[in-house]
Length: 58
Image (cartoon, rainbow, N blue to C red; front, side, top):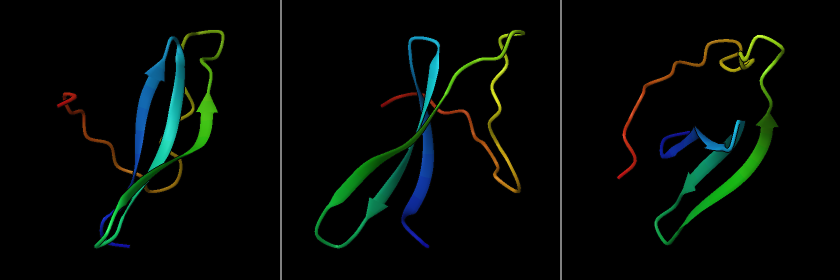
């Protein structure tokens, strides 16, 4: 849906996946998952047809 998209931020070495929801009157951020690195330090992110863009925090 337009105006709604997932974001990933880090809390230490844990990736926190959130979903941002925008409407005409407000914005909500809902934490939907936490992902920990595997033994090689890699994260299982980006399943299916998700595309990622690296951005700087504003």
